[in-house]
Length: 316
Image 1: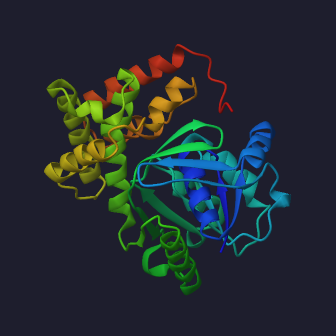
Image 2: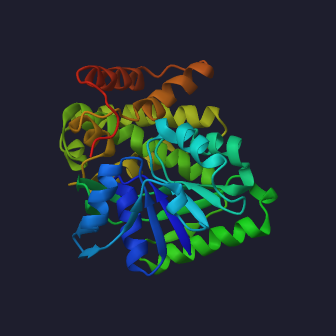
């Protein structure tokens, strides 16, 4: 399968490395030429508890260097989705599909505006990864990937075949992928996990597992999750609060040594995805006439951290 991964962050590098090692035709697209050169020279090294491996990678900053691609996998920040969509819109063949494997809400809607819902897939992953440096990623938590279409029963047979082929490809690479009928609920569950973990770890500057060590942290995490579950219900997504709280705690435990993506951003003085995660809960709550005080505070605090440094976008 010809696959282009967009974004050389932790998850992007992890996917590209596993898929390349499995023998797939993979390109890693990045807008920074200096980082592309480093990736071409170094390849990608994956450090994991189960295995450690290194693989060369085909990295490029130019779409013209990429051969016909079956699917583009977006692993960029949610704030960059619109820019990526505009870049790809008139540059990729009409038979290519796109998968958003990003944090936050609204990514697939932005992609569907440019490419049509039948060409866009949505996904979520529980794999935990930390980018240690350019081309080196720690696979801190082994998880799964869930994939789904965005147009339900209206999805074409060709699109469904691409999605099933992608899942099979990921499984051959050892990434534990599943095609599901109700991707919406899974996306909300992933949002709830990020709501509970990311902002709090970024504010405190601790790995995920530290949140389970004090009752105060657990209380804040549980209250943020409760607000997100209430908002989900208002949007027609029925999540069970006890199950979601246990899910968040289980992720904290299984990725105990992992540094959340939001904390990684703060440590590198990069713009975070707070507006697409906790901030999204705040906006949706307001539109539904609901209160979300915990998420409001978490959002404000992370924005305060961002205000303390000069945001220059991605750094190599």
